[in-house]
Length: 174
View 1 (tube, rainbow, N blue to C red):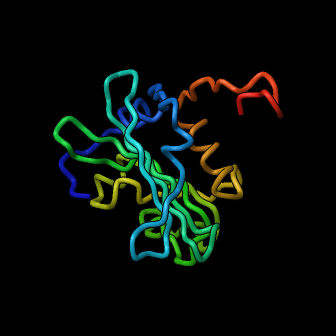
View 2 (cartoon, rainbow, N blue to C red):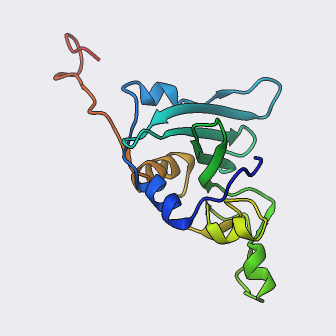
View 3 (cartoon, helix red, strand yellow):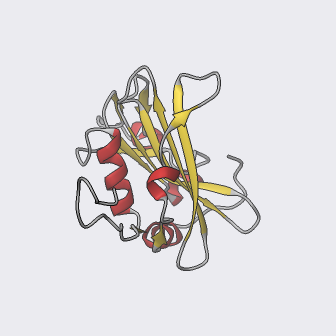
């Protein structure tokens, strides 16, 4: 993504906590589908925020390794530019390095094949790195489904009330 401006940490925090209401059919809209000529399942869904911002949820999962996935929240600004605000990643085989932390000798700056969350930061942008170049290992999820639950919970998403049938079985409206 081409950088058009730097988001300050206070703006990033406000965007992450902004209330975002999922559409009534959100489960269908976020159901992963095969991507043409790829070894990935993918889906995305646009969501409006309470403050008038437009966000996009992007889901991607490997068909070869279900623990290799990304759940991404982007901001689409009024000029059509996109900013990755956070990325909940699974256990992918490539190593991640927090470049600023590596430069200061932090021994935890590198990790591989662990669940981790990338977060947009002002300091990474100011140093010329990707907006979400900083990541931390997490134990808040252990699968794609639990990562999606945590992603929705932690980033201000409001889940519409589901109208479940009163009765299961014959005569129920499943």
